[in-house]
Length: 363
Image 1: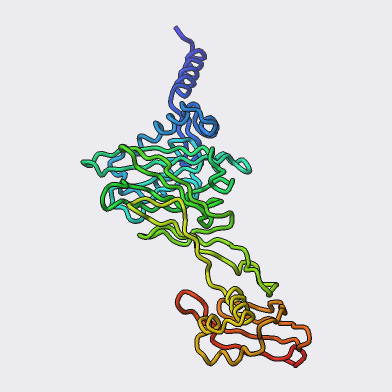
Image 2 (image 1 turned 45 degrees about the vertical axis):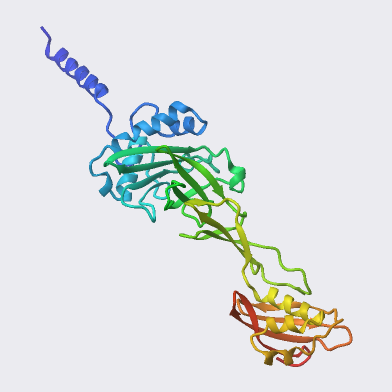
């Protein structure tokens, strides 16, 4: 028979065993108690461990099995995903979206695991889950794990998904694609596009579009994707133009439901390039070329200062989208401060007025 003292001891042992055998509980957003989860799982997965990648997918199965999945908001999906994976629910690191242009049958789950690991910089590791219930209401989940092995196609920097657009070929020949707008930092401006294409029910990377290191995505629409990227200044006689004045539009056309990987490039009109072209025509004596660059014939009279054979140059004082002020110097002639004002027309800038004064005159 147990004594009172031994009974108390036995009760304590039973309580300790019960606590040890009972599954741990976790608070919302805290690491899961499931063995091997959290940062350890992510580190193994980031190194290409196939078992760890499959475990990530398996851990999220309960989320995709929920009957209310299609009614869940982004915040709730973020919390539940973090709980199942044993990670903190970073607001910009777990995304749940209904792609623009898609029916209500597709959702995407993006997990920015490289940032979750907290290294500086972390490994470029993002997982993309495509959840599709378009076939007889059956929910299918397809995964693409981007381990950052193709950074050379991304301007040698990791990408972070910030938005997603769905496109589908009308004829069906091109299949379905998801265009993920990618930023160089979480929640930053989009600088590239990761294209996931559907093949036989699974989604895989079809292309990575990144026209230049300083390019930014302007729009994605029915015609394709448009970036704005820096370009070299025109060769000419004017110097000192503001940084960022010279830009180009880089267009990836959408043909047959597929985004073309070879872009079309067109310069964005700017007053410095327009003035350089105008001065070149004047120096060559090409009056017809000058007329084409003017909004009206009346402007020609204000340009008589420039004549063939002159080889002066100038420096830009100020420039905006339509106005240019510059100091123009020519040997044997007074230095002038000129103001060109342009208007937009036919996809270019046309000279609307040209005024000037001697640089020695008070402004």
